[in-house]
Length: 248
Image (tube, rainbow, N blue to C red):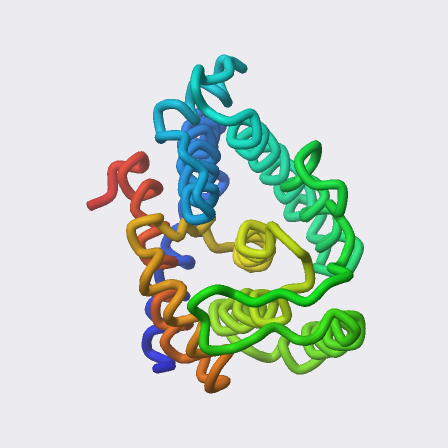
């Protein structure tokens, strides 16, 4: 990963910081748009069939969508609640730990999966992937070393590089039976937002490249392709701010 890419992201961040504090109205506007788009895309990657507009109706009017599974309705509401929890952690500058990871998972699968908030007790195969997540008996120790790395060595990395590794490693370990993708994307944004970057949305249209890049990390321990994809998405995440601030 080229350090000029990181330098460019840091420059964009400084440029945005110069406009802080942002007007409350602008922040509300950005947040409403972000919660909707982020929830739609993160769930759509996992096969949720609600459209962007149906997701908007569910989140803003509390209505269910006729002919759509209740699960898809719950996934939208749960994800929006998980973002609210995430924002409270960012506000208080609380770093990731095991309890927070499990709390995020609990919120994502609340009312959907009775194993919400608990590490998996079974083995899993990721269909089509070139790597197999560790045996469930090793999940606890793998997560232990993940958190040791996160609290230690990881803190010296550029936030975007750290985030790429955090997200990829969580997907590789696959600590939960279900909901790993959504949970690790929430963790990704917890890290990015704590570092002062905007929320990043991985669009459902980029799903194939996203899976391929994560698989490369799992198969070859090569995090560079995913870090590059993430760096581009971080850069794009500034666009709504420039638009609302009227900056070209």
